[in-house]
Image (cartoon, rainbow, N blue to C red):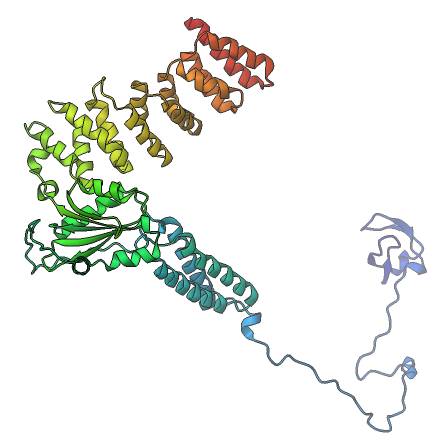
Length: 520
């Protein structure tokens, strides 16, 4: 047997000696060749330990070394201060510290963004306390983030610094109200005593200021412009009534700053209510105080109003009769509640009357609603408007007050369908501007109200229709197709001819033209 190699693919085969000189075909690549000596594979000679020597080994030197040579070693260099935490995966506690720090600072930022304004849940936190809270959160959050970011220390420091700066800037963006609103808890051992208006004897101005506790007003005058500070000293009012009066003054003065109540006296029947950042004059605030009592003193120089509370104006009424529309006194008692200074009483009465049928006191209740509209808070304005829809007689002059309320509601994004429907039904000039802005924001919701404008819709839609996108233009075309007049046909044709509109817009305008012609 001999071993041959295919000259083409170098595949090896075992064949007999008798194949030498014969033509064969490779079983691997199908190459045909005649086996010659050049195709034979000669195995090399092998030697194993203990076998005879080969003369070929003579090429290796046989001379023994005279001695051991000097061997030089280079010592290995290792970094002695390697921290396993820098090269290994982060430990769970460090990852938890990073997320805890970021979560804490992020949570405080979000909470202040959502509730840190003057009307938010955090409105009673003073500015100094806000700095303390944000500063502590920044410090604790930064420590956690820096501790957890061992492998990327600079990244952790930069992130901590950025969030800390944002946190410390939050109190400047959302400062607290000048003072925190609080009501002293009622002492159950204290028996309220009804005070007489003439019970206080004549006294000097210094003694008077000491008795009423004028210090909060004096301190506020140093911190705020003089004309924006007013102190209202209330007499003959228990703690509950003081709280309601303070809330009432907060709403009717435009909710510019939270009120603060300082209880005064030993009988629990007096309090100093401090108002700051006021836009109304002291005379206007004094007029508002007439709703719950008699103004017995007004000191312009001291920025002080003294009011003797009228219990008849602050006490409640029979709730059973108040809620029963069939009761003969239903309208009278609810009218009395509307005249109450407490906004909650007013809101409840407006809701009851909005769901009841008008009766004998229809004109009086309508007049009261109109008087209340300008100074009421948005929720009460919405209920008054809902009630006016059924209580106001066609000849009632409610347009101006209704439009002013609608503008206020529109500024806060709270205009209701009932409000706009009432304005349109009463044909109040100016309501078209509000409706146009509402329609631009939501054409689907307000298109029905636009149709109720009738021909007035043309005046609002035609000047803007060429600039509208396809969606608004389609809705505007539908409105004009239902209420448009012959005069707008030529205007629409001119837009089609002179404007470079796409086919979809032209189709919508042409549909409006066709609908107008059908109605004509």
